[in-house]
Length: 447
Image (cartoon, rainbow, N blue to C red; front, top):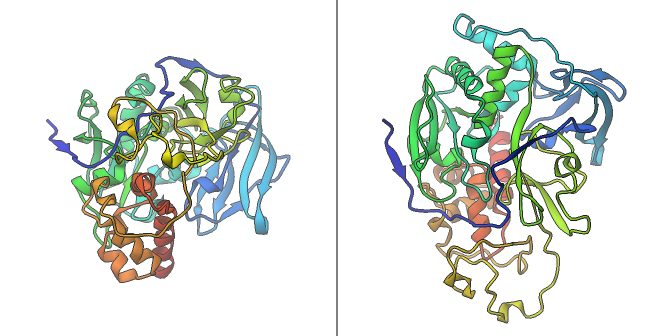
């Protein structure tokens, strides 16, 4: 029986537009994309060119810093475009999909009899190694490393997050196989954390941990901190719960099947619900008239705190299990600070909305002010359930003080752990970007 870990700090942001528990299975989109922007710390090098035919599982590009890590196509079709930005930086590889998917055949592998090297090789060849993320730093794991443990979070506490108990209800076999694979990749334990409000998952070979509390209780970084913190020189790997099922399918079928059941959420969505799609699908094929044509909205691959603004013509991100569409919020509100603002959310009692604790809000992206002086308030410690001093760590990063960054916990955090602090920050500071800048500095100095 797992012990319940209770977190007192955090904040649940209640938004309009939660997904109703009904699922639509969508047909293939016209185009799909794989974007290097979804992966931290890689330098992509192309393996295909426009006009090449590919199958699901065909390598599209590899990481220049580690050539064994390849990124594969989620569908079969033709390479339609290689989208580039400044200095010819690769932003996305677009695939015009076939009407039916043809798969690269990797062959099913018996996890119990295969060696660890054979399992690693299959994950690398198929491109699914990219689902393994290393802590510290939140980058793709190095195949040459042996992690001390592997962590999976079976729930997401972010605003409007999908219910994995619902989306993965039919993937029990794939999940079990995925956990068997993960167990062979570490000499330590595979930790699976779940919401204490839900029934404990029934999978062999994992150590269960129940978490009770507000967001960010579902963040795997918070869970690592309370179960087995990362010390200097140690490495752990993390895998998304839905990604465990994708890995399991590879070992059951020998094929790369990137199908996900995602939540389509947000106040601008007419009928929020779940859809079954393949990762990388174009958003218009998923939303398909579910957002008003004249809506002035922001289209986010992911949740409102950590997701990426991909635009109306964008694509579902590689790791994303959610699409959120909310009002853009680029309007100016005259004397807004003087209004009672019953419909605006605040963590303080500056607005009268605190009188309605159970209200669900239709929030936009307006910052309600410009960036201000970064001052010590003691506010952030109320929302980060980790033994980390957020203000001091941020200032150490801004000062590029590597020794203080180490002492203050840079190894234990990634951007998502500071997303809630950024949300409540009265200074409007881009904390998540500061954390990423600090991580990149640590990586650079460690080379």
